[in-house]
Image (tube, rainbow over all chains, first blue to last red; front, side, top):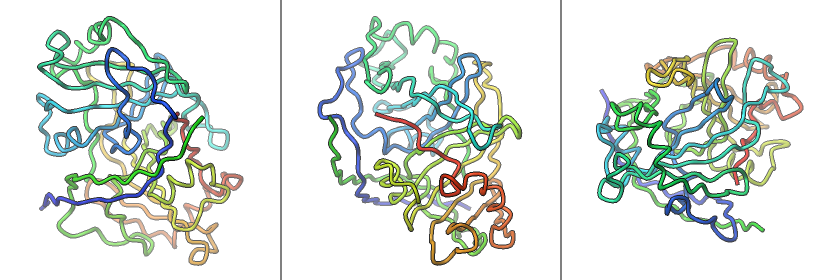
Length: 161
Length: 161
């Protein structure tokens, strides 16, 4: 048996922040606290040799833990932190993060983004966080159509007890 | 230029908890809030086909962001969430989490664990969280000796802006 317990978590954590936030990407601002978000999953793409951590904001994680992701609720933000592959120097069978490739986010707002499945798409490239502006994320959405069955989201919450 | 800003984060998040916590592993209790910890890195092992998210408690993340991990400070807890590989059904080049393999933790306490590099090692296997009890983690430490140069920790904090 499981119980859902509501925890009030108060954590004093250092958050390295740029003196000024980067410019928006496709009209979306970089979520300030994304480094504090919980882990939703991980992935490794062997076509473009990149490792990913997938994180979610509070709305996303509540929905994921309850299995209420068909569709994901408005207010959901999913983040993908993407690094190029590297081999661990002390443990060769381990592929580990090399250089940061980019960080990217999907923002669910069904009113605001009706033409792209209810999702806004944003990406900032490299450690300098250069914003991508690509026609309101329409090219992102084209690929995400492959995941239409799961509300255009590829990530499936990774199982945890 | 960067500034370190101390953020007081108050988040109301649902934490699925077992009605009773699992038994200890090597005398270590399962950290109750590990799902709320920040991402320190990810990895993919192609020898045993597993994907990992590596997370850290507050002490760990403060040390990691400041680069003060030689050695990691007492109080550090690092967690590894390990899933068996699976191919994404809608995007074949993506390796994604399948079944949960185990979750494991390293607890830094240089007074308590002098025989294993100052680290306690704990592991719970599968969704049922069956505790591993293996001679106080000595077999874990044997492998971790390969990472003696980085305080017996394989994970290198993944770069983020």
